[in-house]
Amino acid sequence: MVQALQRKLASIDVSDPHLYQDDTWRPLFEQLRRDDPVHYCEASPFGPYWSVTRYDDIFAVELDHETYSSSSELGGIQVTDQPKGQERVSFIRMDPPGHTAQRRTVAPIVAPSNLANFEQLIRKRTSDVLDALPRNETFDRAERVSTDLTNMMLATLFDFPWEDRMKLSWWSDVAIANVDSPDAVVHSEDERYEEMVKMGECFRKLWNARADAPPTFDLVSMLAHSPATRNLQTREFIGTIGLLIVGGNDTTRNSMSGGLMALVENPEQFELVRARRELIPNLVSEIIRYHTPVLHMRRTARHDTELAGRHIAKGDKVVMWYISGNRDETKIDRADEFVIDRAKPRQHLAFGAGIHRCVGDRLAEMQLRILWEELLKRDLTIELAGPPIRLYSNFIRGIRALPVRIVN
Ligand code: HEM
Image (cartoon, rainbow, N blue to C red; front, side):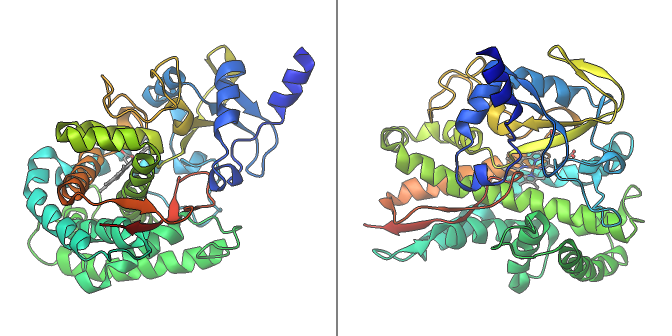
């Protein structure tokens, strides 16, 4: 009996992207949280790695950045190692002090005081996008709403040429593509790197122009003028722009799609928020927890250590599965259910924690809040018109297409 369980546990590899493409990850994580919460997978296509699956253990790893490093040189932040020579270095793949100075450079643009300045603009754009949607006709909600709105937001943050803004989601797709997937947007690391270099060239032109001009309040100008970032070399430059694009794009757009699915699948919760609009901020947090757009972050142990009774050796890969921590029943009541009136809706791990906690969390919440305020104001009846197409990835919980119909 015990041996059978051990054999079963030894065979579990939650890094398999099929689990997320097919949406079949739940029972495996449930078992790991119960029977082997810090689990060693000896053989995976990405090499051996530890899975941290419980809320409190994930939190402990997040807070101990001296033991658990994000450094690109040690392997970075994904279970998949970056190809040698093509590492995309950026501050998410750094430890202090480099991380601290670069994060401080970009943080002001998403500070609460500045977000208030964006609110009207986001509301106007959201309204325009919603008012242009077809009625009684199937369309791809992921493309027409989620991708469009996040591209507009990013174009504003970068002060990127408006007419070219679709390039931003393209580069985001390229940056996170799993090159082994037949429907990936790029099919080799070299192809990915070529696209990233094109992105770098495009941004370098904007950067040079802004570096020569007085500072303005956009991400490119802020990076070009800050002593911490103004001399970034090519690879770090590409990495930093790529981080901001993926950070601001993939996560928010997938929460926009995932949230609609959760509400349509839980009609009583839809009714609840229709009746009590003051629950919208809670709804937003619950969407982000329930969807968990970033499936994991990885760290590398700088020295031997213990975690929940397991011995972790120097150099081991340690993967924090947010998707699992956010379903941990010992921490979150009815964790597997979508409940918009929870007592502590912001208690989740979808934004990470500690020094790398998402810098754009309040912006993402604001974008989602406005989207739901405007959607509910219009009292639209939205039906799913087919199953979603999910991304083949063990890093981003992506919804590539979401066919829907508005029937009123
Ligand atoms: C629902 C939307 C979002 C989710 C779920 C999300 C999730 C995350 C997660 C899990 C991390 C890593 C945290 C850690 O390692 O502890 C992160 C970091 C980051 N996010 Fe987000 N994010 C979202 C939106 C955004 C937006 C809108 C932006 C920018 C405009 C952004 C920019 C970043 C950046 C720059 C980092 C790196 C922070 C650091 O290393 O210090 N994110 N995000």
